[in-house]
Image (cartoon, rainbow, N blue to C red; front, side):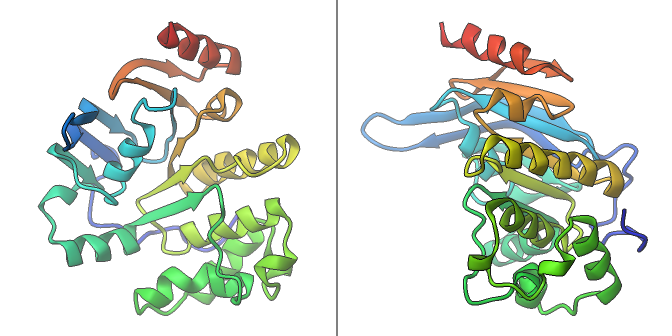
Length: 256
């Protein structure tokens, strides 16, 4: 566990009362000859320091929900608040800056820059924000995630599990209010994927980090404290600390 203080650079907030992420009647419609209603009035509070999984069949709205909640896309209606800040009121430049400093991302494909070393990839969000890395925090984070000895390796020299751990370190280096993980184990074998899930759980517990995992995998979802089930752009079920079998049953019930 990192020994460095985990006091973050989040926007000022009371973690006891302010959700890390709050969605209020969020709707997203893609215009066209036949408009697509991807989200249909979603309201959610995600507690700070929690691990939440969002699941659903293809076309249920999972990716749209992630994009709107993370500030990558704008809802057609409603509010999205991260650490108490309403993203829907921010100008594009301010939103980009806020997202860079207070939102972390972990993707299925890792998205590491091939010509940068592992540690250079980890530092990249800080470099882009014009911030100087905290050497002690960086060292603790790399050690905590088990990649300290890989710091000088290029992404092509890393295994899939190692690359995903580096990607998680990159997502955490700014000490974000929330980390969104989009199918974080999708490119990994089951054993490596389980190890990465364990890292995410330990990260949430040790660093009081809020993590939102979007997945179609019931086993991945069952690693979360809370599972949100989507269908047709709406929340149709919520499960607390479910088993993989319970998540699968919930998905099958909505597919009928």
